[in-house]
Structure formats: structure tokens, C-alpha cells
Length: 220
Image (tube, rainbow, N blue to C red):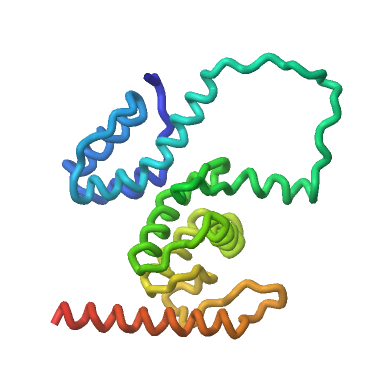
């Protein structure tokens, strides 16, 4: 049982536009899970939003529980040489700050990962919905690193990049161009798109057009 919990602005932004009843259900579920690890029986919109928030709550609980564990006594000399680091310090830290666990959930370590956790879960669900799930944990990690590069480490821009791809039916993440975007820019060593990347974009454009056409038919 815990006496305190962390609440993020991303939670508030995901919840506050809904009715008072739905907001109350979600906030109650957040408190019950954070303090007592009790999962509420939610349905509809409340369940969908809580499902996206839950991975962050679980990560915070895990940190809390790890902090309570008794540390093992040191059995080797402090002066014993540490293993030689392979690669630069930046490369070593890179693997610590952006980890993806076997469930596709981020093991959050920085403010950037924490802020986009809900959007990242939405992106994973979208990829699954269009029958294009990530084939490996490495591919998820590479996609996340690409998102961080495209956004320059800005959580707000990262969320817009994800939303842009979802709205257009793209299975990849591309530079944010706003409402005037007609073709996404790719990040490569020389700043140009490869033939494979262009083919991917064209296929995504076709899927987006088909999705818009289906929506029009349903609305008519």
C-alpha cells in the first residue's frame, strides 16, 4: 500500500474534456490502482483511457516496490575495476533511457518518455489495428528512437507526429508538417528518401485514401 502517487499532466489532458461522470470514474480508478493496486471494473471510454494510463502507473509502482527492497551487502571490493565500457557514453545511456518491455510498454526513465506514454500506447494499438504490429522488440525501440529524433525531444511535437500518422493511416512516423503536409520528410544520412521509403509512403497514402473513402460511404 502506498501513501502517495505521481500524477502527470498528460493524464489530465486525456481526461478533462469528458463528462464529470467519466472523469470521476477514471480518477477513482487511477487512485485505487496507484494506492492499493486494485483494478477497477470499467467499461467504454473510461476503460479505454485507463488502459492507456495504466502502464505508467504500473511503472511507478514497480519503482516504489524496488525502492523498498533491502539492498544486498557488497561482497566485492569497491576498488575492483569496472568492466570496460564499449562505445561512447552517449551510446551507453541511449540503451538505458528508451527501453521497451516484452509487452510493448515503455520502461520510462525520462520526462520525454513519461510525457508521451499515452500517445505511444495509442500508436502501438493503431499499428495492431491495421494489422501491422511490430515484429520484434528491436523494431519498437528503433521506432521510438526515430520518434525522439523527429521531435527533437519535444513531447508535444512527438504527440503531434503520432497523431499525424494515425489520422492519415500511415504505418510509419514522419516529420510533422501540420495540416498542409502532403508528403512526409524522411530522416536519412543525407536527408533524402530511399526508394523503399518512398514506396512505403505511397502505400500509406493509398491506405489513407481508402480509409477516407470508406468513412464517406458510411456517412452518406
